[in-house]
Structure formats: structure tokens, C-alpha cells
Length: 182
Image (cartoon, rainbow, N blue to C red; front, side, top):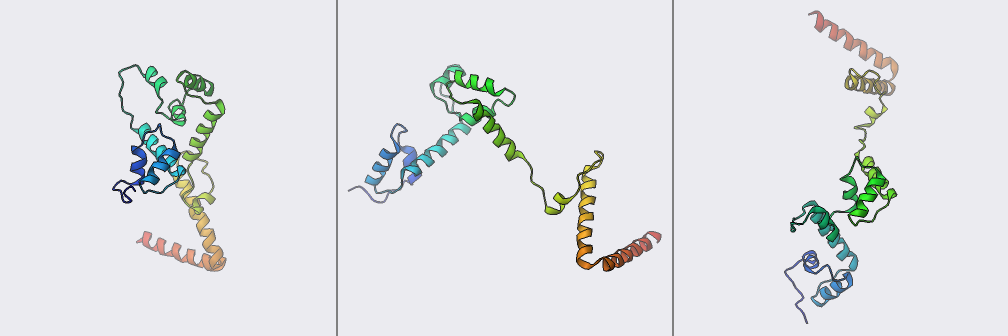
């Protein structure tokens, strides 16, 4: 029987296997060597390995780029779409067909839509999100901060009670005026 302990990790073993082998064949060979994993794991490791190849492509051919793209495409479909932000979806589909990549117009819209959704900013806090949007383009940040401070002041006044909040504010006003007067 084969050695049950191998110094090679499961993922290293999978990456060392030829991509010509099916996942089932890789699992069977691993089982013969005493390793246990399923076909889904093989697919996962191969996918991450192929993504790493996309981010660090190696130029092995001196042929023009169009000829290399027709031989084997190391760029994912989504990256192909992302690389052409100004091209129309129909134009991207045509360019993909010329490069030997099959994709549809809906796919282009889906990739661009998911990228757009992931770029949207989320509000920094609940207080800021409750603030009114600034109307003056001159000082939008100051307006947003002062507006959020007003929202916070209203919340504090509601918690303490309006009478007590007014007393505190009048006391602070008197303190500030005495400091300013000298």
C-alpha cells in the first residue's frame, strides 16, 4: 500500500497534477496515496490556481497577442469585460468572439452591474445617514457634520427632557460668553 503520510499538502498535490486529468481521476490517485478529499475540493483548488495565473501572466510566446489569445485564454470572462470599460456591450461581445471567448450581452451587463454595486459607499454611521443632504456645494462636509450634530442634539434633548436640555445649553452659552469676554 502507498505511504499514508505525505509531506505534500492536498492543495499542492492537486496543483501538481495535470489539468488534463479529471477531478475524479485526481481524487482516485490521492486516495491511492492516502489522502482524502472530494471532487469539489479539486475544482476549488484549480479555480484559485487559475485566478493566480490571471493576475500574474507569464509571457511564453513571442507570437502577437491576438494569436496567443486564440491558443489559450488565461483571462477570465469578467476580466475581459472589465478591461473594456468604455466599449459598448455589443462591441465587447464581438471582441470576445474574435478572441475565442463566448459570452453574451447580458453577461456584460451583469459584470458591470456587480462591479458598480460593490463600489457603492455605505454610510459611516447611523447619525450621518440620518443627516440632511447638504444643499450648498461650497461646504458639503461642514453642513453634513453640523446637520448630524443637530440630529445628535435632538436625540440628547429627547433623552434628557427638553427643559433639562435647555438649562444645560444656556449654562454652556454663559460659560462660552464669559470666556470670550475675557
